[in-house]
Amino acid sequence: MQAFKVYGKRELQDSSLIVGWSEDAANLGTRVIDYLNKKLATEEFGEIDPVDFFPLGGVSVEDDIVQFPESKFYCSYEKNLVIFKSNAPRAEWHKFLSSVLNVAERYCHVKELYAIGGMVSLSAHTSPRELLLVSNLPKMKNELGQYDLARGMDYETPLGQRPTLSSFLLWVAKNRDIPAASLWVPVPFYLVATEDAAACRKVVDFFDKRLALGIDLSDLDEAVARQNEKLAQIRFSFPEVDSYIRNLESNVALSQEDSEKLAKEIEEYLRRID
Image (tube, rainbow, N blue to C red; front, side, top):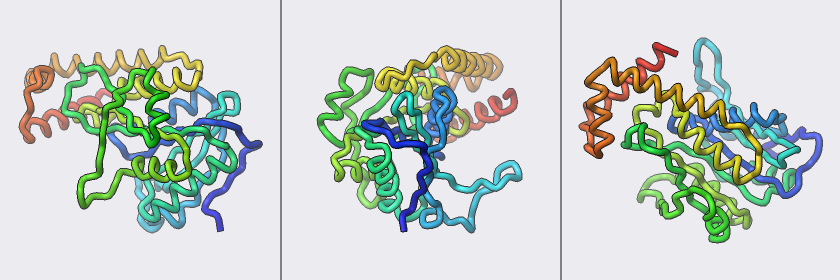
C-alpha cells in the first residue's frame, strides 16, 4: 500500500521541487514555504499519510489547539513548481523520503529539488545573511555557481550521530540521479526562537532568480526593515543587550550565560511588542 495520496488536477513535467521542514532554526523552512504558497497562489497537490511516520498518540498542543503532523504537496502549474511542507518524520526516514520522491518523479517528473534549512549562528543580526550550499551531484553545484551562494561548505555527519533529514534526502535523490541541493542560512542564535526576516528574504530571493518566479520582494524588504527597527529599539532601551551585540559585531564570543541572557531578553521583548 502506497504511503501517499495525490489529488492534483494534472501532472507536471520537468518541474522543480522545494522541500521545507518545520522546527528548524527560526522556522525558516515553514516561513519560506508559507510565503511562496501565498505569493504564487499554489494549490494542494497531495500528501503523505502520517500513520507510519509520526507517533499520533503524542501530538502537540499549541494555544489549546491540537497540532497534527502534516506532510503536504502544493503546486503552481504556471511556474511548474512543486512545494513540499512537512514536519520531520519520527520514524521510517527512508520510506518517508522515498514516498516524497515517488510523488515527485511519478506525478511531477522533477528535474531538480531544493531543501531549505536554518542553522544556528553566533554572528550578529547586522551581518549579511549567507546562503550555504550542499549539493549531491557535481553538475548541480556547477549550475548554481552563478548565484550568490557559499559553495565551499563541506558537511559530514559527526561520528555516532544521525545525518540531518535534508542530508538523507540528498542521498536518496542521488541514488535516483535527481540533482538536489540543500540550502542553509545561518540565523543569529538570539532570533532562532522567533523569526528572521532577513534569512527568509535571502532564500526567497534565490528561488525568485533561479526559478524565474517573478515575485515582488518589497514586502520582505519592509519586514527586514521592521525587524531591524525592533532590534535597534531594544539595543537603545537596554544597554546590556547593546553591549552583547557590539561584542558579536566585533567577533568577541559571549559566554554561555551571556548568550542565554541575550536570547531571552530579545525573545521576550519581540513577543511583547508583536
